[in-house]
Length: 147
Ligand SMILES: [Zn+2]
Image (cartoon, rainbow, N blue to C red; front, top):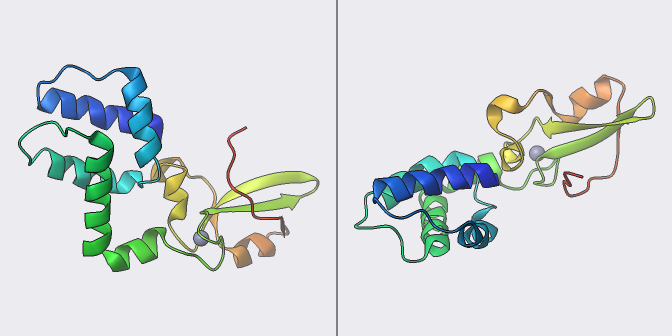
């Protein structure tokens, strides 16, 4: 999930438990532990945390516990939505070039792109055969860097 998404959940949790907002520094430290959790799962995590007695003593662990619960109870969904992918290798992105320009596509064979983008912001989501059929060359898979 993105930092802004995490901040927004923490904001709602502090309101829900009528708690003083945590420091920016604490939020950043928690975020490091939970950033790999897909945003799509956070609504469920929010619901489960707000079903408990109070604001979690250890926010990072609370999110990680809920995420591991979710994976155990929805293994097929995790494999389909966020698991390994024969096209993108689980990265969720496909890199291609055409006419000297480089392009990034959201992988059309899995939903790992949700680790990088919100569903509604994805403009180009293609499978490898679709990319090749439009005259692009695939280039080396590499981890996503925003710079
Ligand atoms: Zn994929």
